[in-house]
Image 1 (cartoon, helix red, strand yellow):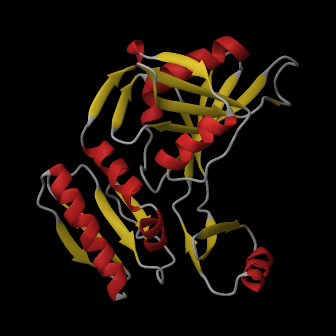
Image 2: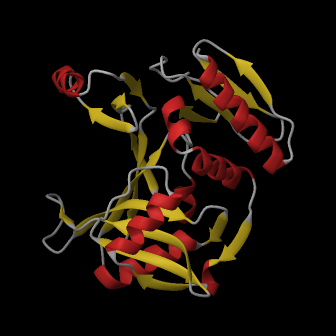
Length: 259
């Protein structure tokens, strides 16, 4: 493991320890470093660029690559803290739900979400005293061959709270507003297993349907490109030869049945 990666992990450990007021321990393993504490509900596994695959642990954990930590250090810190303690609690009943335009939702995702921002087709947000604190992005409806003509399945593409906020009941309120407007037959989504190996969405009625296969990436500079076949990988390498492969833990496919 290179010295810059170790320095980055130490910086993360110190920042988390400061904000959480915890004493954290670093354990160096084969190609990755583990951060843990008896007070943390999950261990944190951090992977150097040269390590392609995840450490398969039976314990609940958070899995982060070096390139991700370099690009989105502050967002990662805030997300770990949000999973470890509540900064500012807001109750959704005290917020106002509204449709959002592309520009507002895009900027919010850039500032507060780890994944690539996307527009989606339908965008909803929660405002507290005029401040946007939570958003949900939905796809258009899809016909399902095994359902009647009027049945439509929609995908929840992104859900995101403002960094440092925990909006209690926020997703439920956003989904309720979407259901009133579009009467979906179901809403499906994927939860990232790099951050949780089970899903809190079950608490609001979603059902886990399957665990999807890990996603393969070619990482070059600040960009990650997903690929499915060796031919696609060869094409990516031809376009951007300086890079390295990565693989995540996949996702959990979740469905909320409305009808």
